[in-house]
Amino acid sequence: MAVMDVDRCFFCCLYGNNEEETIIREIRRDEAYEDEMIFLEQHFWENHVLAKTPPPYTEDGDLVIESVRRHTGPADKDAPVVTFDYSLTAKLMRYLQLQEEKKRAEKDSKEIDADMQRLKGALIAEMGKSCKAICQQDGVNYTVTYNPVRKPNIDKDNLIRLKLEHPDIYEQYVTISEFRRFSVKADTKAA
Image (cartoon, rainbow, N blue to C red; front, side):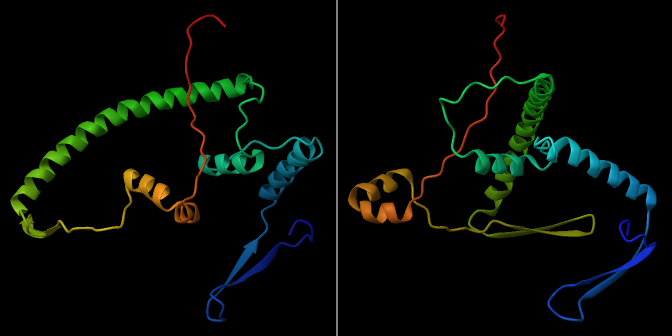
């Protein structure tokens, strides 16, 4: 709309692969938003594209880690040590602060989990072999189920046995995945 200098347009979206599933929306020009976008685009162009400087990641952490893994490839233990600047050191300090908050929350969560497990144990003990129990409280009917779930599994010992007895089958079906473990150690000695 900015390029064509038009005040309104109609946006049409066909989805679901049929004409009955169509959305048509009228969009009116917002020049303040337009000015902001042009400013941000100019900043991006000058400071990242022309400067050949990648922009900072802003996505979900898991997406960033996956993107970095694909871009940089496997870990290299001989690569030089990276020194974080002030900005990244601040991020690390915030990470450590959140890690401590999580530990405190997990402690509370473990206590809650223990209480829930104790109560669940009492309910299961009463159910015995039965897979279903019912009760009513304040006009609400509750149904409790405790059904068996069966799924195929191969434990570590059997996996080793498979590798020894049938290495061809083992190699055909077992995949090895690599991951990297992130950890932070604090050393109080002067740097």
